[in-house]
Image 1 (tube, rainbow over the protein chains, first blue to last red):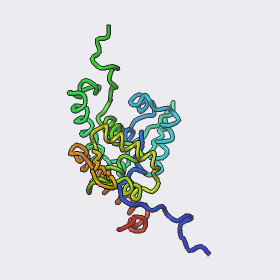
Image 2 (image 1 turned 90 degrees about the vertical axis):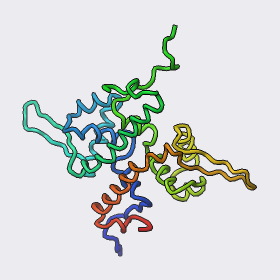
Image 3 (image 1 turned 120 degrees about the vertical axis):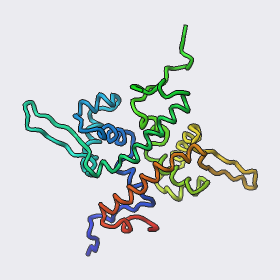
Image 4 (image 1 turned 180 degrees about the vertical axis):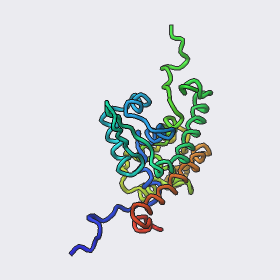
Length: 123
Length: 123
């Protein structure tokens, strides 16, 4: 007899930030989310913005973000077919935290390099 | 002749969030910083709060955070010798972003599990 309603006992968390990191943490997800804040992007656009990510890694990260309802995949009925990814309203709720991190990162580059414009492109 | 004043050309960043992630991103650093927000902790206390991290990984992450001026290592002249780690004022400047992530994570657990108290310990 299994009294669990879920197939496995659910994972336990010590602090909320653990759960947030599971969804949006790691090397690439925060950057992907950040780049989608200003609108839907195609895979090719994301790769241009993140030249160090492999196609395989990008695909895996997009799938994971889709599964967690952070982004949605839009397939357009066009010739040639077009696909892009955009933040869901839920995904957009991560914007304030990412904005703070972005601002912190710029201040950090000022601190380390004297002036962030030396190392920050398009600034 | 090398006209660079730095030994290598400095790494370029596209957005500030990349620089922030370099310092506080990844699987463990945000959690370590989060656990230090309420005060200095010894390595053994951090391991208790993060049972899944190995000693080797914890040591590596603490070194990296120390190098980036996010935490300092305090060695007390006691018998037996005592060492702990605490956030620097600079490290504390990450608190607002981590607070937002923590809050977001709790809301996420409510969304996924109906009620975060089912999976969040000490809640």
